[in-house]
Image 1 (cartoon, one colour):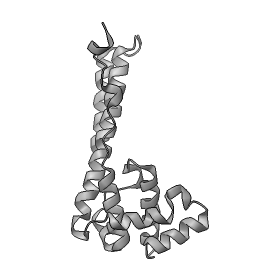
Image 2: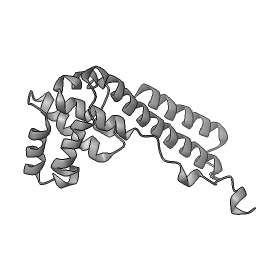
Image 3: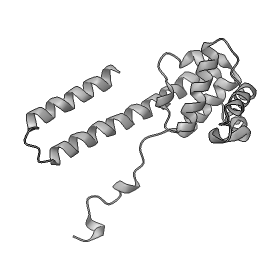
Image 4: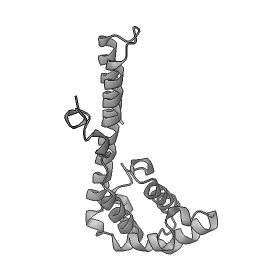
Amino acid sequence: MNSIDSPLLGLSQRLPPSNLQAEQALLGAILANNRAYERVSEFLIPEHFADPIHGRIYQAISRRIEQGQLADAVTLKAEFEHAGVLDEVGGTAYLAQLLTAMVGIINAGEYGRAVYDARLRRQLIDVGETVVNNAFANDEGLDGTKQIEAAEQALFELATE
């Protein structure tokens, strides 16, 4: 079988689901108007962001808002600068760029759900990879029935998360 006919062709080119534009737009909306946070705070956590920098920024925003403090580009810049991590989150320019990517507060919930949905799909891929790898493994202690039960349990846990 030559490499062109390989069933694995293209798999290495597939990227996990993410919506970086939605992440940026949501962060920008919250930075512009902290009330946008209310539309996503019930279901969105930093780990849902595909870009770890966005998760870190969201975590700082959440912490400030939950403590009754203002979370905007100026206050986050000062906080990140004080912690010595401003460059790690893209610097002042990136915080300003997030503001240009913002959406209105009305759309913040939709963008938050897009971020959350991409995270769920990444987790589904992880469950699927585990199922496939277990099925290919020749582990005598993990027969087909046990593999199905393990897959069902993993999907149930994901659904109830």
